[in-house]
Image: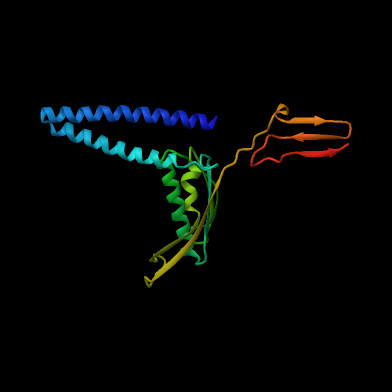
Length: 207
């Protein structure tokens, strides 16, 4: 169902982009004929926005991993360094939340463990929407910040670390009884599931 919705969304977007491209090319040509610079500028701005959207769609087309289309959990943990790293971890959390909201994703903060003075020790955020994991999976790793510390009265430079891990949200689906193929004989019962990367091929129970 999700794949079908994504295909329908992609096709709808393709038709809309094609239509807007034709309309704005005609608008620019009309502006040139009439010598109206405001019309030409309006068409050029619209074409620039379309170019950026096409680039985004091209990147989305490359997100073909098995779990790329899933929602994503993002876990953030402050590294060693106390308040400095905790503040950096909270900055990262805010960055991911704002990025998700700017791209029309739904965001749910699953949990936060605040520091004693400022920042967070850890946080888990759920980002819901198409290709959320595909976009966020490359954020996994250790992130470093070098800055003049606002918490240091001597204004010294500090290096802070925080780790980020992105995981795909996996849907648990209860299969109907008809989904299983049950084979029986006088000595044993064999239950066979359809083959796939997440399923066992079969289980035999002695009678």
